[in-house]
Length: 247
Image (cartoon, rainbow, N blue to C red; front, side, top):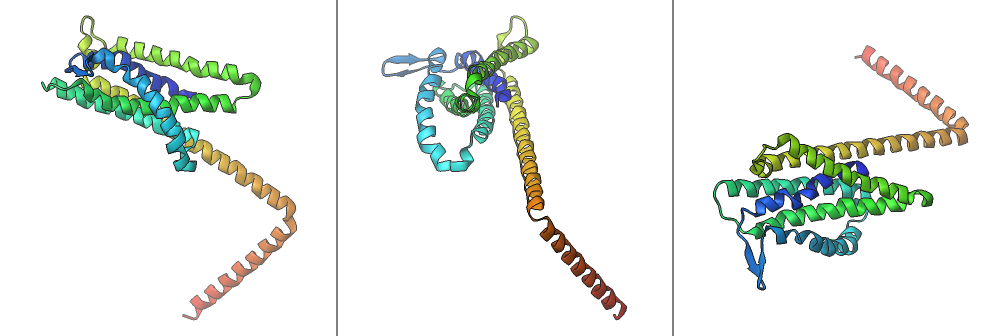
């Protein structure tokens, strides 16, 4: 559950750093007399959170039913987070090509990433708090929030490794954004594989328990059925052998 939080936080924290640097190369706009530039675009995240939480909780999740289980929501959120950086990489390519883009173009990746944040973080916090034992709720929440720190450390480490001293433009290249997208896609795939293996293990355990209970309750009947099937198989083998001999 929380193992995908560092990668998601790695993505989300970029809105306070690399996305702002990218927005500085875009054209600011005026809205209702206010100048909207790269710094002001950061307000889109909390605004969208307040909009998307009730929309998803009251309208979308009930309609999806079992498809909107917490683990499926978090998996989908990770793929959305990665997709947002593909959009940002595309915007950066347009900027590098000399196109003058409005800062409002960043609204699209903000919508995608904030939706992912609601699917992952909000769902994860709710799931952790609901499933934890009463005496463990505070501890579980602490571990969940600890992953935020790991995400921030991951961002710092990646920036340190790939940065060029005195050149901040390397942090806002299309290649760097694609790298972040690839990182999140990898985590999402790992999470999906992990959930699939857990589901298979649960089904296996349930099937084993079912067979054990069935054998304990109807052992004699199952033995009789086995003998009947063995007899039927023997008759079929004899018939097929005779048929081959008389061909």
